[in-house]
Length: 178
Image (cartoon, rainbow, N blue to C red):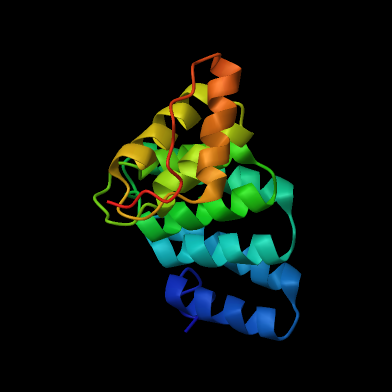
């Protein structure tokens, strides 16, 4: 297929996966990047490249890919996908790239979901990124609207936000359920 159509993204993607299995990491990287370049509208290609870079522990390339992803979304070529943006956030956080992770979480914060995980991640990531106002706002949203009992880490972050912002702490029931 590739001899007749060298830019066939599906074939390149499948070959990249095979190259990973064969430990041909340089070839796999080139093919994953080619897929994203040729078909930037396909979420799976982004996810595969992101996962590959994460497994390679290539912090710099992950950060560059994140910026390219956001740029591609802003150009209207790609829409924010909840799973892909959440994965970017998780991986960026694992490499201590909290400000970059926060961009991905905030981009999907308004997507309807019964899951409080993204709002929890925003609360914690914003705090780690030094964005205390954002952390405070999302922690309060969780406290007021969460369908699950508040977990200790959220209450801890909220308490630290109160301290940093020099606000009076309200009484908070850690076992509160809605």
